[in-house]
Length: 360
Image (cartoon, rainbow, N blue to C red; front, side):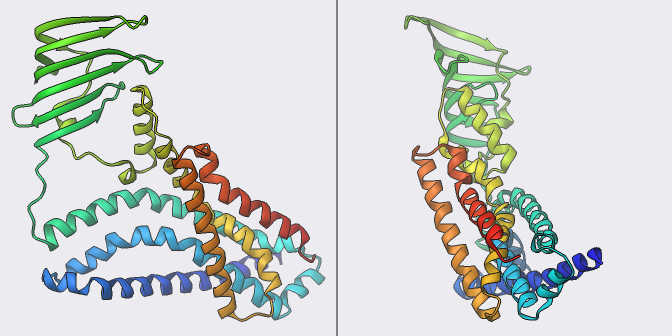
C-alpha cells in the first residue's frame, strides 16, 4: 500500500511539475522573442538559427525557474490532497504526514541533482550562444586568439604573467613580466623581459632583468640576455586559448582558478562565493520544497491560482536573500560559505519548524 501511495503522489507531482515547468519555459521564450524580434529581423536570422539561439539560451533560464516550478507543484499537490480529504484518509490509516511527504522530498533531491548537472553545462551553452550571435547571426568574423594584446594570466604553479603582446604563430611573448610567489603568497622573484620564445618545450626569456626578493626584504637584480625557464609549465596554446572569466566557468574550472589565484598570492572571496553558489542554488529545489510542503497545509482551501501567487512570493523572498547574501559575501562582510548557504539554511530551519508544528 505504501509503495502504491508513493507512486500516486509522485505521479501527481510529476504531472503538475512538468506542466508548470513547460508552461513557464514557453512563456519566457515567447516574451524574449518579442523583445528580440527586431534583432533577428535586422540580421536576417533564419529559423534554424533562432531555434539554436534558444537551445543555448534556455539552460540558464531553466536553472533559475526550477525552484519556482518545484514550489508550485508542491503547493498544488498537497493542497489538493488536503482539500479532497485524501490526506485525512491517509492519516486515518496510520500514515504520518512526514511519511506522506517523503516521496516529495526524494523528488526534491532528484530535481536538485538535475539542476546541479544542468548548471555545469550553462557556462558552455552561454559561450556557444555568444559565438552564435557574433559569427552566425551578426556575421562578424570569429575572434582570432593566435594574436592577443595585454594578457594577464595565472599559471598552474601560481606564476603570474603580464604579456603586452602574444604572437601565437611565432610562439613568442613580447614585453613579458613574470611574478613568482612562495607558499606564504610572498613575492620571491620578478622577471621583466623584452621577449620570450618557446622552443623544445621550454621558454627562453631574452633581454631582461631578474629580481630576487629575500625574506628580509632584500633585493638582488641580475641582467641577462637569455634565460631558460624549464620550470614553467605553460605552453603557447595556453596563452592563445580564450580566457574565461570566473562567471563563465563551471564548478571545477572555477575551483581550479581560485586555487591558482591563492597560490599566486591573490585573494578572491568574490569568486569563492560564486563557487559555493553553484552548489547552493541548485539545492534550493529541495530546500524550497521542504519549506513549501507545510506551507501548503495552511492553504489547503485555496485555489491553484493562490498557490501560484504564494509560490512566486516565496521565490521572490528567497531570491532577495540570495542576492543579499551574495552582496555581503562579495564585500567581505560574510564568509563566502556562509554567504552562499545562509538563505538555504534559513528556509530549511523555517521549513523544519513548520513541519514539526503542522497538524499530525
